[in-house]
Image (tube, rainbow, N blue to C red; front, side, top):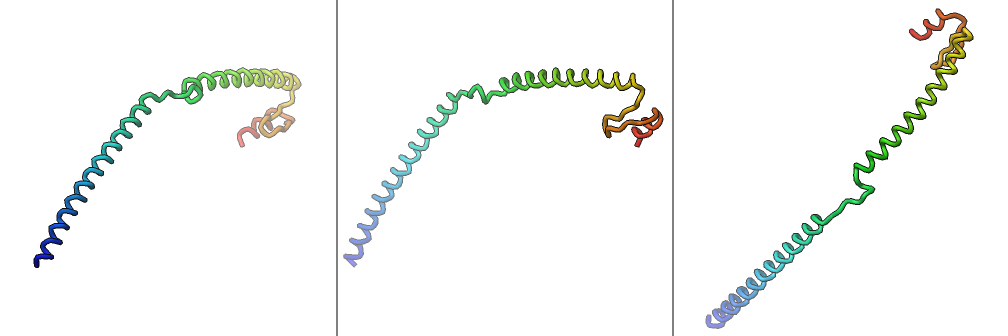
Length: 114
């Protein structure tokens, strides 16, 4: 029994040593984790968004594109109106959707209803 009691004491000593080492390691990991967390927060707070990512710049470019398209569309619309006025003056009804020429206005209006 005497040897068994000695082994139990050694086991308890080793157990307490390993337990202290484990607690120390956990504390160290927790401290390192909190330092990493603080570092990440500092990096996030100092983050500056690139100019090309900002939505305000995209809005400006979008408005410019819309203006260009509107100007081009107005030019095309005015060209269509001038060509329609020439065709209307000729007296021949023409459907732009199906690109047909009609003999009478009645036939033209009937095709638009369908």
